[in-house]
Length: 175
Image 1 (cartoon, helix red, strand yellow):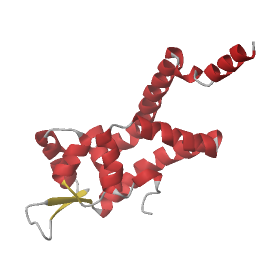
Image 2 (spheres, one colour; image 1 turned 180 degrees about the vertical axis):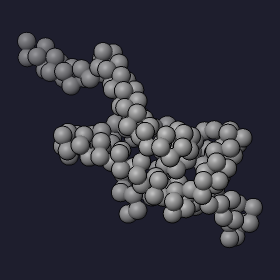
Image 3 (tube, helix red, strand yellow; image 1 turned 180 degrees about the horizontal axis):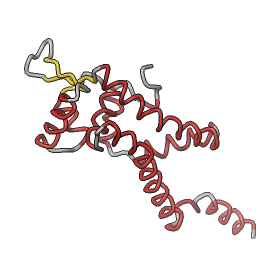
């Protein structure tokens, strides 16, 4: 009887691996992503920006000065698609392209002051939602959430965290 009870207790720790719980987690991630996109959509529309421009601005906010080829790799988009998006941001004066110092063939990407201001306004919406959720969940849950999210990343995506350094292992932006 004791063996049966200990096996049941041990299995209780794994109830989160059941399909119903995993599907629920999938639904939560889908809805959270959709709601975050909806939260920033009015600001994007007001600024005349689309999701592609926003994704570029997000990456450049945590990784200023990356080469175009690295941005293309991080976003997983075609050169043609990225070129169009970069051109639009450059026309709006949100993006500055500089040549590499040592390798003049490199095109390094930076947000301009206007681009940083626009990204900061968009991030303020995300920050507000994350802070509210984090406060409600508490420190242990936030740490667990970070572990789960990192655990879901592919090796390629994990390399973004390590390679870009500024977002390594949950370290605060700019730290």
